[in-house]
Structures are given as structure tokens and as C-alpha cells.
Length: 111
Length: 115
Image (tube, rainbow over all chains, first blue to last red; front, side):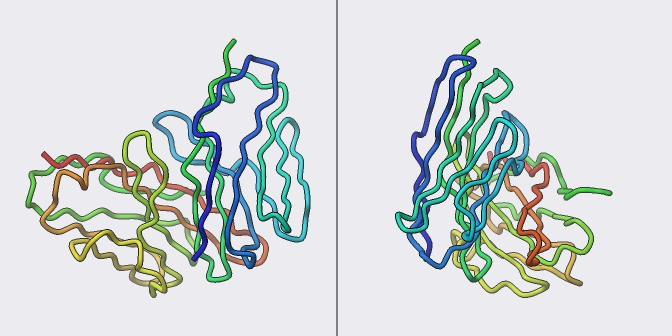
């Protein structure tokens, strides 16, 4: 089955700096890669996603890049703000519609 | 419209008792997932339903865990003879699972504490 690894587990950045979180996956047939944000005590919510036929997708300050050959994808947050502080999870979906989540990255934006 | 709902929001039970957790997905969502999240940890996949059938039960931690879904809607997760290590937040998510959207919508979770 699919195996998703996520790094780093914790990340601290100064407000205004960029943050990058990376994930790798093992199943080359996986075709959908979402990123979820979970604020403390709240449920995970989708912030951006990318399909395997696209290399990059951007939505305001967040972007996701996908390298199918290397089987890795990354979340980029620019001009970070304190409200970006949360745990971020990457995921991959295989051909059986099964989601595999990474272990999460706790992002802290220091004002 | 209404999102995914779960009940109860909190459950405290004694070790050895059985508990039943309920998930009401978004109407029309064919796929339903159960996850477990321990304090400060990631999302541990438990089981996935497509309609009423569960093609993948591999994530259930032991035979004390079972789940069912009826009418392609409500799902219940049952834990028998609860143990302290079962304490966690149990999250349910639903999805359309169509070509246009794989997005999972999560419920607020049930916080289970086994004493």
C-alpha cells in the first residue's frame, strides 16, 4: 500500500518569512494530493490540493508543487502570519480511493 | 447546508465497557472515513466505506473495533471492552468521491476517555 512521509515534524518561522513542508509517497499510481490544516482543538480542513496531471497550484499565499518522477510534493506558505500557526497534514489518495496521511507538521509563526 | 456531525462530542467510559460512536455525513456523500487521533499525533486511518460496504478494514486496531454504515448514510463505530489505549479523538470524514472532488470534510470528532 501507499506510504506517506512528511518532514519536518515541527517548524518555526518568523512572521513574514516563508515556510516549506515536504512529503514523499511510495505508490506511483496515487493521483491526488491534498493538504489539510488543523488548528488547535479543531477539525482538519482542506487548504489546497493538487492532482497528478498538474505540477504546481497556487492560491494566494499558499502553493503546492508536485514532482511525480521523484514522488514528492511540497506545501509553500509565503509571507507567513501568526494565524498560519497550526498542524499541517499532507495526504495521498491511491487508486482504491484510500487516503494516506502524513504524520503532520506543527508550524509556529513567531510574531 | 449541514456539515459532518458526530455524537457524542465527549464520552468518558470505564475500562471494559462498550462504546458506540456515531457519524452523520454530508447528505449525498458516498464515501465515509473513520480516523483516530491521539493527543498531538497524526491521523490514524481506521476504516473506509464506499456506500454501505467497507472495501478496506485493514486499519481497525483489533477485533474489538467494528463499524457499520446503513442506507449509505449514518455510520457507527463500536469499540467493545474498551482499554485505556483507546482514549483518543475519533474523527469521521465524508467525501463525494467523484471525478470533480475528492475533498474530505471532517466532523468535529468524539473525544473518548477510558478510565
